[in-house]
Length: 521
Image (cartoon, rainbow, N blue to C red):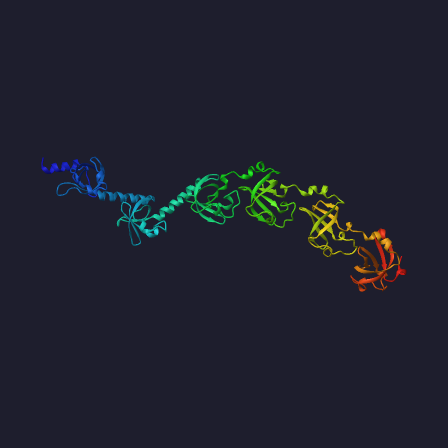
């Protein structure tokens, strides 16, 4: 057989390989720095140990992918390239990732104009605008491994453009959608306090923010979320509501613990004594916190038996610990009525026994009005003396001319005003009644001088002595034709009159300016 035929048979007996093709090879021998690789061809190829990324790991029997650069060199050996095979494999991997919109890993190699060079198996360009976090120091990125999305590939130029920003945004959106689909009301979830406002706090749940409203932070009273939370704080919250269409999540913190109002009737039954801290003052009362989330109102009327309170601050201040009695509980509306004054016995309960009608007492004037004076009988017990009960007078009485504030006054109890919780008193009944001696001192026809105390349409009242007044009818005035007594007399005028009618039993006296003989029956 001729030599040409032998060579032809030999060529046909080995696999057909092409230059530029990537094939499987096996390490068959390592001699010094040379690595012999058999690819099933008529001759082995030789690679340098320096061609391998980890030369110390290269062993006989290892399979590797190599590129056939030439089927035969001058020495008759096939020429192989490990680097070019890797480059082709990486390029094909990136092409597949680009087609399937899959992320790839890349290491930032260096900073260049407009961005960075990234090693993703092949060199790729990462524009500065495609970096996810704006606050990342550009120099600090060098050496970092990032997860990227390929946004452009040009095969003939071997040009690859990648984006870190796109991957991060897509990952956020994926996590957000996963979170939305998995969250249900009542679930507990961990997060981090991202931002605090006056109305609540936003919690980063890992892809989506949820709102923790101030009303859902604590069962107790807080004026601002910062009293409980700080930015960056790790926190576990309960999902209250999920609006998937609007991507809104409502969260609660207080709901992790039982509502204290559920057991409030057992813990604080009406009539029981409690202690608490004053947490709010208003013009109508003060609020007392018995425990976190449970408050009661002490109305201003329930602050003291003994003092007239005009503002709750007269009894207690913010933060003070006070003792009170539970009056009532409205569990449905989370309301509790408390009383501070009922810690002590009601002094009014002893009034009927201590100050019976007809008993005489003494007290200090603590208030004067146009129509009455108010007496402090003892701490918590008040009495009232109306103007007409101050002195024996049938005319108008001005209390300010009779007594002064702070003055001690004796009086007799005439009634008990249960509704207003005060004693009805009389001062004049302890004074001599001038009418008792009127029948002895005065008689019909007697001439007197008196003072006009009051004028009406039908005449005038004239005081002839303190507590004794007579009626001067219009018909008994000097001018018979007058129809208006005010045209003749004024309050305070001194007039000469005669007694024309007298009835001490009825406390009546008729007077005339015309003389005793002018009486009209």
